[in-house]
Structure formats: C-alpha cells, structure tokens
Image 1 (tube, rainbow, N blue to C red):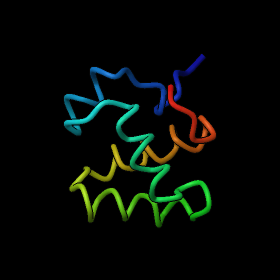
Image 2: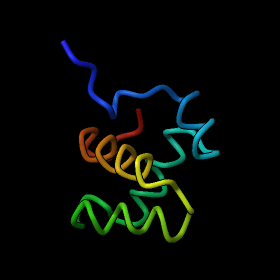
Image 3: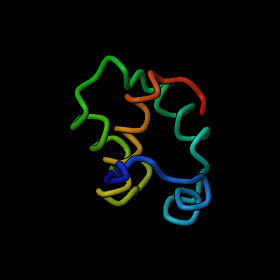
Image 4: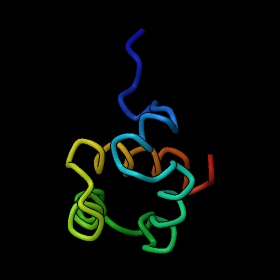
Length: 71
C-alpha cells in the first residue's frame, strides 16, 4: 500500500519548515483553515510563512485530515 504523502514525521516537517506539526496545527486553527478552501490555506502558508508549495499542501492536507486536532 502506498504511503500517503501527508503522513510525515515531526522531524521531517521541522527540517523543511522550521516548525513542528503541532505548531502548524495551531497556526492553521487560528487562521480558521477548516472553513477555507485548501488552495487559500496553501497560499496563506506560502505567503505568510514562506513554506514551499509541496510542504504547504502537505500541511494543509494533514490539518484537514486531522479535523484540526493536535496530533
């Protein structure tokens, strides 16, 4: 079975974005990402935090799959 691309470790996210997954969950919760379109959330992460597109998409999907809960 193929591993889902948003199934990433805290270490991977920290290395690529400078923050832990729970930090991003908090940021996206404060942004109310659950009520926005995913492309809007990706753009927010790219514009406000300079997150590379792949990682912005990964974090957005991870957040939406978690229903905004801390992981």
